Length: 133
Image (cartoon, rainbow, N blue to C red; front, side):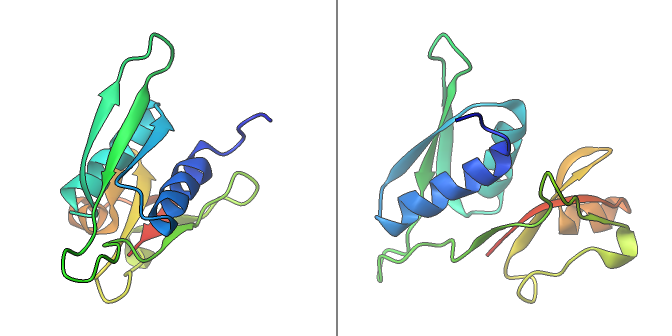
């Protein structure tokens, strides 16, 4: 099966791993996915991530984060917004607010991947790739 939407694949792999309480999840690497993993890490949605060189495209191993007391995931939902068949672009005025700023939207902008807060700060719009909270 050909991968047509690597971002949806990235989100689905994390979602599936969280459902079965895995500590880590491996995702085929790409620059875009590395940037997404980095945003998840900076925003404290995941513990960490490493890029493993497998001699091919590489693998991103994401260390998932759970709340110690309850064991539930820090990530409640990962939603793909813009899809290959239907792109969702927003300008600065219409940047999404996710769960009263409890979550983030990841945007692809002219300045690379940014969270909606960072995009607001830099006054750029872009394509809303996904929402995470």
